[in-house]
Image (tube, rainbow over all chains, first blue to last red):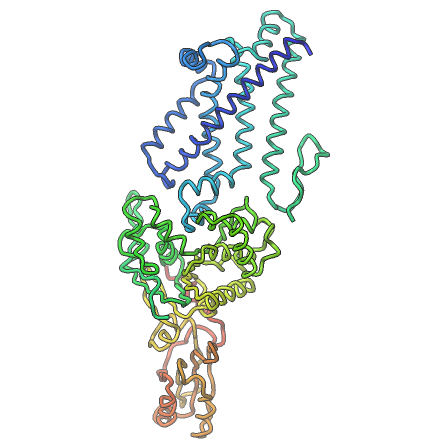
Length: 236
Length: 366
């Protein structure tokens, strides 16, 4: 593979990998808090809920390109530079955290409230409810949400390339837009498409594997890989 | 048997929404004694679900107190919305089973049963041992590794019961536990509850809309209407109460006099009297032809409890002596008025059918 391409791929993977880690680490608790503090939640606190909701909506309403530029000084304060993949991780994470938090919120809301009450009736605390009910019960949905987030991050990372983040987006811009090497650009497009497809397939497989849990019926089958074997043995 | 385990005092629950208030509980006083199976019946909306959820404070009562096993839970709960540690500890001593089972789909049967023990901080080995015992008790040892989605409704409820018993509670709350099950499964789950009540001395408070459930397992029952308990007592006490609606629905008797010169007598059997063959004695001693118009009898512990409507030839004046004999036998005897309105169903029909038709009538009148 072309050395430039290898380098760009590595940069993109680093950007996406690190920002995914930060996004999950921050977005998951944020999503949990959004559910718990809401009306009817276990830690009902409308003031906190409104404040968190406002911050999340603000983050979601800004187009990523604007966010990236608006955060330049914040990025410099944190990583010491505004150039390179390390710098891109900051706006990528800031952009993806609210997005993922909303997805987490939606997933947790789908957990049957009866299960929460069952654990409360056993004497479980709020933390027990989160740990033993909300997160495990919504795990397939959370994995699907994380997959969507990673795919979005790959898209954003290409944009980050435009303002000096490096990676595949940067390469495509330089060769495709500035040098008119259309062929090379299409190679990059293909790499991006393959990356997104792989992430989506892996996410689907993981979500189905944890989501099956003894449900009878057909084993999980990937839409593209017809011959895929079930990932987990049957539980009976 | 006579120590109260659950006591609610003047329990009120008012739901407030923007522009209206709904009173779900309107001053409920309820006493459930140790070792009994207590059934609360009522139509949907009568407040029975709110009541049982107030007992372990899943629902905070607006006012009034709840005592379980001598502890005032309402005092433990305090003012805040969140459950303080003391209330959580008390809840761990109260098992609860739900209409829709509420099993965690992400855990195996075994892990579901272990969940309350995890919350109590029991070690892994001990948890597995206890869960094994409990699954044995409910007859599901072979399903330990299955997931809830692989079980039938009845099996799920058995897991629910095993889970509710994991913390070795003294009290079990059953919130319509059999309402989502078919009649056959309902019977077996009720039998299990009855066995657990006998074997473990477990006190059971159950709510249901099915009279058959009360008939099958309950020692005592209460009827709720519009957020109030309108009748309450042991089955025998209810039977002995003239005009008791619960007794009427539990033991419905019907049947009309076959002619004008007949005396219709309702006999209520409760206590000692029910062991003697009173009717045949009556026929032999006084040489009267007794016809049975209707009867609803149950046998509890070898004693018959219930009601029977019989017809004696001749007017009341002609039957004073036989009726006196029946009274002497310790039966409760009520003379049906000569002109009486239909009792609303055939005598031999099961109670639930009558109950249902009563519900339908009520629905129409609303």
